Amino acid sequence: MRFAILKKWKQFGRDEKGVTLVEYGVGVMLAVLVFGLFGAVLAPEINGAFIEAGTSMPGTSQTFTLPTW
Image (cartoon, rainbow, N blue to C red; front, side, top):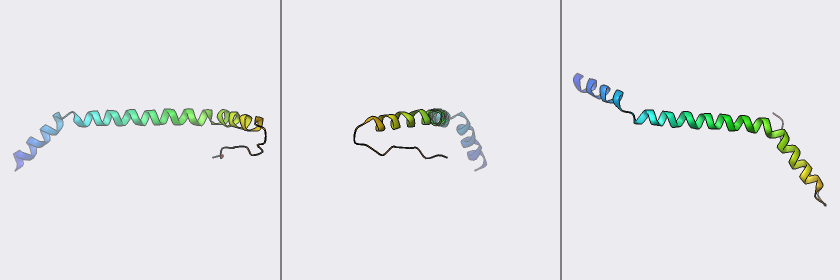
């Protein structure tokens, strides 16, 4: 029993499938972080563009505003 556990532990240490999963997880996390930061930085400019487009259309009186955090 003891040797079986040690054998499985050594196999687990050599298995690289989990490493690939961790690398993908880190990549996804970085992508979400980068796009989230760009979205937060560009939000006022995008909001201004939508407001400008909405007010330039005839017959529209409502404007779109993003909530402030």
